[in-house]
Image (cartoon, rainbow, N blue to C red; front, top):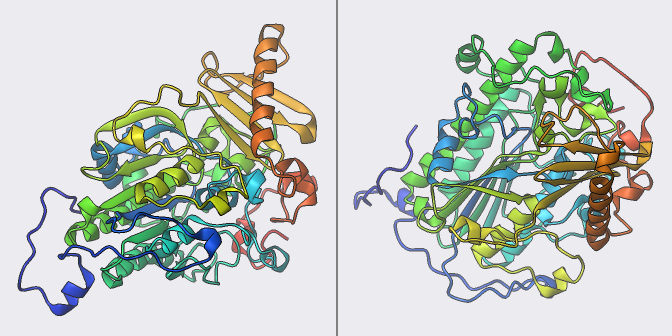
Length: 507
């Protein structure tokens, strides 16, 4: 793989085809197209907007990168982006499961605002009939209205993936459900991304979203040339934890993965390296087209993953009630734009997908129209100034999350989790018990902390919670799948295959 060391000179001998596809000449600013007046972006005319590439991977845990301190995993492209860019080491998901987290990236809203509260079983006709996010204005809508050519390749998982959604000029959905050959599908995500870059309209700025999914279960069938390198690994970075005692195992925690954890870990590590190779190919294409200095590159995942951490495999739905464990809620987040963002930074501030939504719009100089903002109170805050080396002394000292009716506040020192379905509030002392083994909410010395954090949690959601989509009434909302904890049927299945890979997915 190559990554940018110097700008290649433009050759006068390039073919006409090459000149059509590359950006040797300066891109002409385009006027903002006419659009829905509610979405009129009000962008400054004549601004030469940056290109944007966002990689949003599925189940890629924050701990599973070399730049995050993993001593054995090999992710050279992502490590390069982090070393020369900005790594947000306290990035969190707003919800530790796929569809709600992705919806928050696209809308800038919390699940209790956009209405997705669990993963969508898209092969279920009842689920797929719901117009999920049908009323929402997405990031792609705003960028397209501002003149961007918008592309989505890879995993969508927000309903009706087979139908191109308005707001996108280019639509190539792929995931583990739609591919005859999972390996071919994984590689095709990068092929589709590179093809878009080569065929794009060079007179328009572009927004390219790349949805990798190699790190999602089932953890098998990854390239042997990579898996073989990890079979002799020590996996010393995976803690030998006792089983988390505050919920019964569910979902991926019950897969046969647990019977051969070393092989599953070798496959998972290989999946992370496989994604890294795909990222490297896109970086090479940007460099070959002389676009590196004109492009913001962002890498993140929808949520984290446990691979033996806390004695579990999976994420928030590895237990019932759902969990908010650190490895479930932490995500990698790396931003790189040479000469625009200040490289070589590791930032400590708390950020989420909602904050990234605001940063991307600020970076593109595209505001959310007032008519759109009047429909919702947006919870995010752009951290672009931090990525440029600035200081924000009043930056929030807590991060919030939700999964259905489970809600969380996490500060530097403590994590409070409220689970109304089972009538429980838990408190974890992150300083004294970083592995979250003991709920201390019932201990007298923690009464004040519980009271203060409960008040803060309720006050936060009171600002943003919308009655028609609130997680507190999730059992009354449309069904997402047949394994929702709030409609828990008590099944405790140890399965041979993930249910979403069968014709009777989630039935």
